[in-house]
Image (cartoon, rainbow, N blue to C red; front, side, top):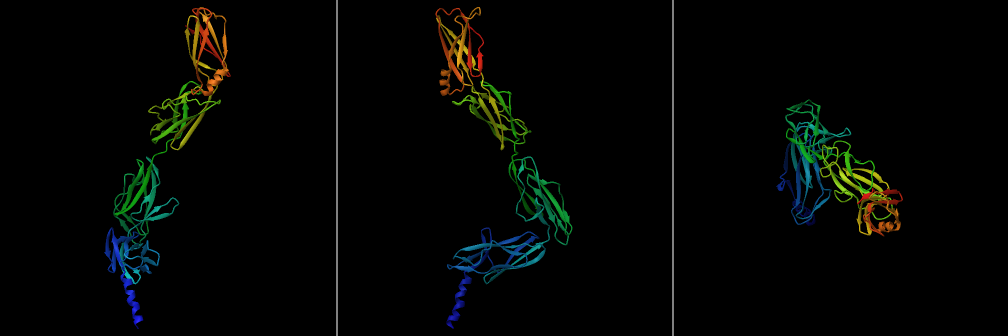
Length: 455
């Protein structure tokens, strides 16, 4: 008999270890047997946070956790059996949601041997649905956002809702409105709205962001707020194309490059124009192929809303320097995910002597020449001198074979095809009669002669 009486005495502390509370924010309220959830509208949930605390130092175990009653359910409930360490607690939700009007809906929450009764009410109200792109619809509850597709600044997107009366009696919507700077009715709704039994009304809401970023609004129906969200994004700039001021590229020139747009831009964006250069012969690169604006092979530009051409520091084009080496020049414009490119050939050409200066001594002539050979293939230079009457001075043409000198120079130069040479001519008599000179170069691609220099 003593052993039989001992079993119920040991079971009593296990029940005393668990206490039940409702939680609002940080405040706990002990449950005394009846919890009033309040009143809602049909389709809209009511819920309470329920906390079970083990107030003892011993381990407590929940073996039964269930709720009964029409419209009642558990949310975030733990899997059973659930052990709770001493002084620890667990939280879950008791939810009530009814599709029909009810004035006194009762539900029973059972925790092991303990039963807590819940009471709630629901008044008849229309249900709100969001129409999906595939034609299906999703019921919306207050506080849950409806998300609009990302929309370019200045454009619009629309989402459709259905307000449905599922009841056998008419319902009235006393007030309905859309809030938020970026959200508006597609067709203005004003005043109260009466919905006959089993009828519905379509509602179209427009999302029209004027700036980029996250936008918030709400559809408010009789005080119930259904959040609206959408992201305004910057428009994609139009596709770029390249335009040069010259149809044919030559060495030693500066040309103007413009980045044109397919259409007038709705976007503000930043882009970059860059170039790649491949010489047509082996040897050092030509650093003279660049954009003088940045002294490099890349230059930024901006696209402005309302413009059909990109701007380089406020200008509608930029300068491109072609350098002094034959080869292929590739231009690439990048903006807004687009990439446009064009290749241009700089053909090999005869030597260009840009400046020729003569220094005359009594019995010596020095001719200084600055120029470029874009093929780096000069092999011969010739000189002619003239008297004041324009007659060629004996012994006539003076020619020097310079292929090896130029080859050695271009193997190590860092200035592309540019060169500077000095030719010295000792004279057997006075040079006073010499009044003019011409210089002629020959390379693999032809012969070039300077104009006659008078001095």
